[in-house]
Image 1: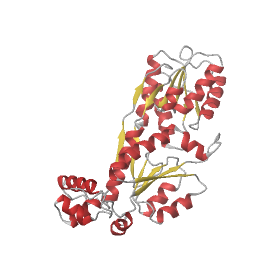
Image 2: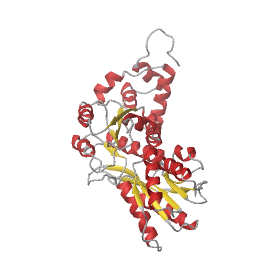
Image 3: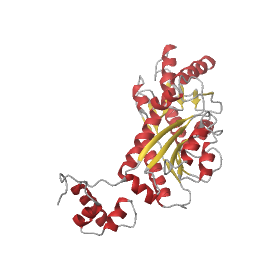
Image 4: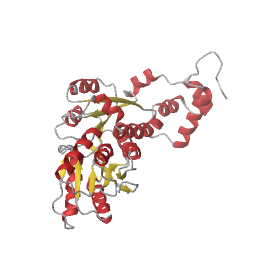
Length: 346
């Protein structure tokens, strides 16, 4: 039975008649009430499609007090080499993978994703926007320890999930990868290749991921007879990786194995190594971290530690939906395991 083409917009009563259920049941399905039986939900959704009924979103939001939108807030500090904060947000493969993973998980819930980049200059604007109820929850990409935004969002009482273990103690749900194990995979692989003079370009040391990758890489090597591992702190940019590699190789020209804590920095580091006349991996083996599209842009193709960012973002989105639909849930965390992807650079 179909009401398309009749000159009038189909009504909820027509959907109920087509589905053989009450108007109240149709309303519960439209408003996403979780207690509706899955078979009944499927019948009603089929009737909605057949009749061409379009729910009144404005009226529904008045009933449910939900916007059917969540914010992806990307909070980053000002770093060296940034030509533009927005340019970094929309060109860094990591943020693209987060967006793709979250969007894919939210689409079946008919939830829209609002992307909000923010740096230290406009946190007040973000908090004001969230306080006004424009979104039902927040996926927060923040990791540096001086960022006040995780605490500010937490204090708002709005459902939120953070993209990594918070740098400061906070009763918040988060999703992370086992950073330490990932760095150990890199160290293990470089040693297995026969590298003996190892070094690393770390991530920023004001974030747990940067600290964990550096500490685990050094600890693993120290336990295996390599107590002195040179390190230079990077900033997760191509330009920063290139500069750090030049400094590192100038101070330690005998380095034959290099762990770079992100694929973007690895791109720059490979350029520096090759500009200095050294072959990769013949003279210097290089391992990155992320397994983003940047790893495939490298020449040679980059051996790297893969963190499953899309899956992590999808898990964040599902956790957030659980907090939105069931207020009062206790915070929880999920840690994913990294893997090593061996290509040409090591």
